[in-house]
Image 1 (cartoon, rainbow, N blue to C red):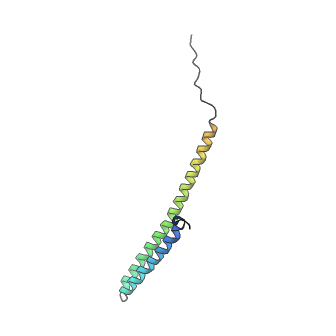
Image 2: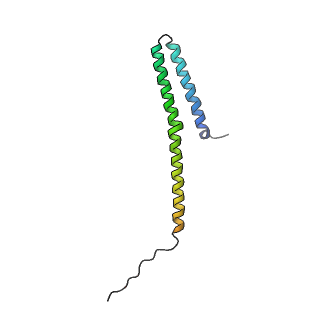
Length: 98
């Protein structure tokens, strides 16, 4: 069995979609005659849903890719910098002046 963290995007997308449709159905049944309330709730729910999915699948995914790239670049720079310092640092000789 896979970890939940491997499937978290799928699980969250299913939960978000089910909750969105549940809220819509609940509001539609409670306020069947009032079209103004229904349209406002529909706009709010769709806006909230698009904000959540846009952040989760857009911004946070891009940010995690950027973090991975920065960590990879840092690891590469550390390995190359340690490989280039092979000779020990020797202090300069002190020459007496006459």
